[in-house]
Image (cartoon, rainbow, N blue to C red):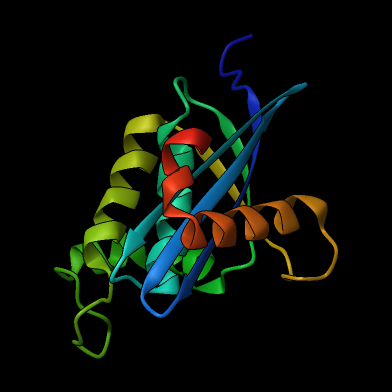
Length: 153
């Protein structure tokens, strides 16, 4: 089967409160699942949303067909523009600095180095999608419980 790539479904979410942030991702391959999470201080919600996707894609050890589910339009829309920002030396069309360019550079790296085909799907947050809700809960939990970081990864 030339060109075959395993199908992996990834759900991600990020959370931030008073500068304390958490991120999480749920990866699904056939009947296997992997839940990962982490946290940072002095951060923003957008940085946590980006980190969740970067960390999830970094876990894949072979080129995959990825369906990426996120409730973050910032991340999903940004993935459309990141190559243009890179070409413009991390400036927007209006010549303003791109926010979080350090993470967008990492996003390009994991997308290119992984050889993945990524289909992005937006899911509305807090509407009962069990996988999105799980990621949301996990991101908030790890944000509020730093002592648990090493126990979840």
